[in-house]
Image 1 (cartoon, rainbow, N blue to C red):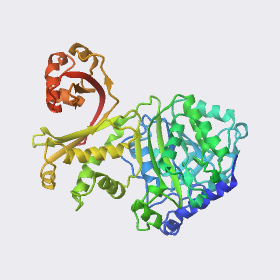
Image 2 (tube, helix red, strand yellow):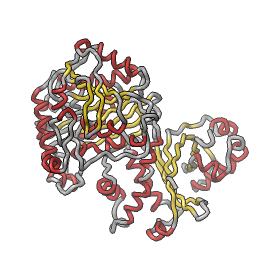
Image 3 (cartoon, helix red, strand yellow):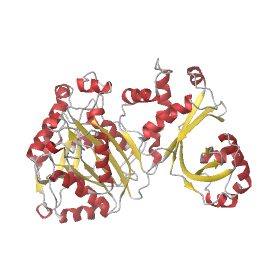
Image 4 (tube, rainbow, N blue to C red):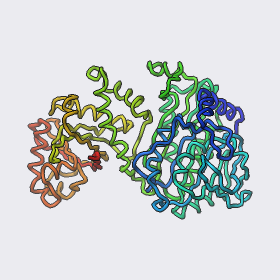
Length: 531
């Protein structure tokens, strides 16, 4: 089942990918001392961990990529955002299990118990267990050459000193190991981390790439989300580049173990972030010919592509949208960026978004949030007294399989420049007035069985639900949840009395002269940009 040639190709590719930076890193002190590791270039000081606002408060498990930080920095930053704000007193967990991919041989390893040093920070490696009984080989030497756990360590060290159970998985595992890990996770105070990279393809991996790399990788992610762990092993068994049977990931056994644990303890995914190396453009000046071709939109026939994904799991399966503090910075930053572009009036939305993501925020990853079916961007003008007045609001319910970040940036552009109720925003207006942005994330609409006002008043949750009215001439209009209370003074008690006024306003907004035909309600999660 294990293919030594695959391991050789993977390590050769990693060497080639990072070759241009190895000497530079040695000169700049990129070496670290975790178990005297041989892959000194894997944590790149030019791409350090940068974190944002949220915490891991509700997160029980995470699946990470394990490539060098040069390639997965933004992915890791999003998954781990806010770790510096967690103190040991505020953490919900007191230990970590790390299930890492074994690229070296078809065995399962655990290091010796002891304190290992990472960049001057001590990490307690806890292997206080009978390795033989669990089908594990106890060896520090293995972890000196295995790289897959390294890119997570800059983030893990910020969590503070606590026991870490580190496992390197290269083959199927014993039921005893699975049960032991499930038992540990059932205490409710353990964070589970596993890692894998997705499809490896291209000439340096001795195989062609699929015609649609993203589609292939996203199908693998869906298999992970659906706990179809046996699918990964089946692909490994039938790996054959000549027949274009691709290897969907390099850590199938690690992911299988991870998937079985989260399934056993009832964890659910909430969001995932995805990227691949072939669509990344380095932020330095060492852009190679392949990336120049990508910039020109050439076909993706590649020297090499590796897929990366980070997935977050919690108990409820409900996304913690408080991470929107991170996303909420994008509308203002994007508008600022647009006005600095000489061609902003002639450039397409897609072109501006692509340039902004590549150059301004270094965020080419695609983000998908569970149960988010749409998003609206609102821009309010704020006077000196703090009073807000609408300056633009446009959104979409057609999220489908679209990247949340692209949706936010697209709707921001349309809100600022294309809302027909207002003239396009000018640079002078933007510089001389105070504006505040907010994002509404929307769940899928639910159609009411009756449009009778008494039924609507029972169904709608004021402060939570937005409303869309559909009229007989095909026109429609919607109001977000906050509009009902802020603009109409509607409460749960007076909605029936104000229903006719609300519908007339929606009719006027839509431009309809027809009769009301149907009503949909949808849950809104609204977040204001900090003032």
